[in-house]
Amino acid sequence: MSYVVDFVDVSTVGLESSPVAEALAGLRANEARYFRTKYAHVFTVEPASEAPDVVERVRRIIEEERDFTIASPPLEATEFEVDGIRWSYVFHESGLSVNVLYTLEEGGKRAVGFKLSDGMEVPAELAERFKFARQRSKLAGTIRGSFFVVKGTY
Image (cartoon, rainbow, N blue to C red):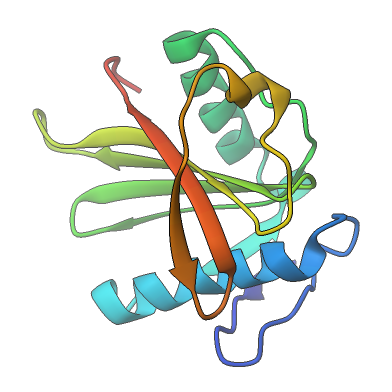
């Protein structure tokens, strides 16, 4: 069942099994606010079990581009297109959010982004591969993020 993410009244709906559920809900709400403000897009997620194609696409891009997989189970996922960009998101139980920005036009930006919820440790599979920058968010506290550029075609 789909869930429209509310960035005014932040809820842990769908994220309850995460040890950092409140921080992950804030991170998810932060993304919802960004898309509402920048693109007038309503950010809607669904349980990962109901979006296996999205979860598999994100997993495949990471594995083929960087030869690793995310250890934490996925809780929720979404995929949508705005302004010629396909966005895919997977929110993991550990508090990790993974997104794929994929411009549909050739030569456009394509990247995988990782955001860590406030209070979570850097996952072992990311620790040696990426450095994380910090940013403050009213909804999510301190967000640590990193990314890599996608070279292949997906």
